[in-house]
Amino acid sequence: MKTFQFKQHNTAKAIIVAIVYLLIVFAVAYIWLGGVNGMAEKVNSIGSAKGAALLSGL
Image (cartoon, rainbow, N blue to C red; front, side, top):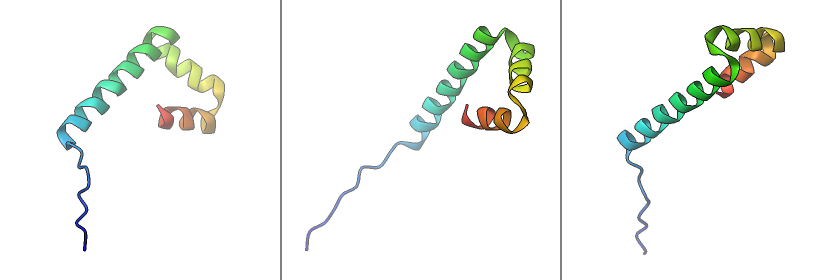
């Protein structure tokens, strides 16, 4: 019988990468849409359901 070894991810490293990714996405959206008020206006113009889906996706 063979023994299988699975690659295990480093959880701490994955969390750091995820946080850095979210910060970069937020920074790009902040600059591109003109700050927090610009982001809020964009979500309002899209509509509540689509805006919630956009925020969830980010």
